[in-house]
Length: 320
Image 1 (cartoon, one colour):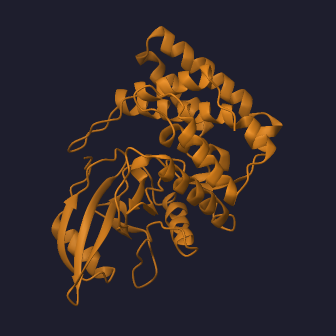
Image 2 (cartoon, rainbow, N blue to C red):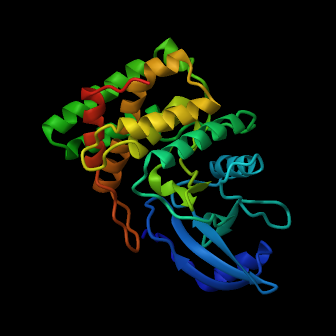
C-alpha cells in the first residue's frame, strides 16, 4: 500500500459534500500502487451506499491532469468501462485536497485476474481495440510522458546502480529504440490516446466478464502498437521466466484484430515494440527501486522481472 499523503476524514467529508456524493461513511487506503495516494471513499445518500476512489496525485501537476481525467470521461461516455470522474457544481473534475491535485471516480465492480487464461486475454484485446477507436476523436493531446524522451533522460541516472552486463544491455537497447523511433515506418504508425499501463492489476472482471479498465495516469498519445505491446508483455507471458505464451498471445491478438486489424507496418514492428515495452518498465522499476520516495508503506516492484522480459524479447522475437 502506498499512502504518500494522509487525508483527514474531515477533508474527505467536505470533498464528498462539495461533489454531491452524499454523506461521508468511511475512508480507507488502497493496497498497491506506487505513483499516487489512493483511498476507497464510501458515502450514503437516501439509504443507498456508494463506493468511490479518491486519488491524490503525487507527481502529476494541475497542468497535466486534465488530459487524463477528460480522456476517462470521453471514453466512459462512449461505452468503454472506465472510471468516470465526478464534477462539482461548476462541472470541474480536477480538485485540490491537502494541497495536492485530486480526483474522485466511481468504483468499478469486479476484481483483477492475476492468473489469466486465454479467454481473459481475448476480452482485454477486444476492449483495448474498442478503446483505441473510441479515443480517435478525443480533442486533447499530451505525449506519453514515460516514452522515449523519458528513457533517454532516466537511463543515465540508473546506470550507476547496475552490474556491467545489465548496463551494457540497457545502453544497447536504448540505442536500438532510438534507431527504431527515428524510422519512417515507426513515425507513420497509427496513433492516438493509449492507456500505456494496462497490466493485469489495472483490469477488472466479474463472473468472467470484463468490467473495467482503470488507472489511466500514464496515458498519452502514442502508437496504438505500443499499447498492444505493453499488454502482451504482461498478460501473455510466463511471469517467473518472462517467456512468451503463444496461446494467450494469439487469443489477445485475434480478438484485438477483429475490432481493429493491425496494419502491415504494425505487424513488422511488433518485435521491436515488445522490446520497447519491456525497456520502458525496466527503466521505471529501476528508478523506483534505486531512487524511492517515502510513503506510509511502499514496496517498489522488482526491476529484474522486466530485465528478464527484455532479454526474452531480444533472444526470441515474436511475430504478429
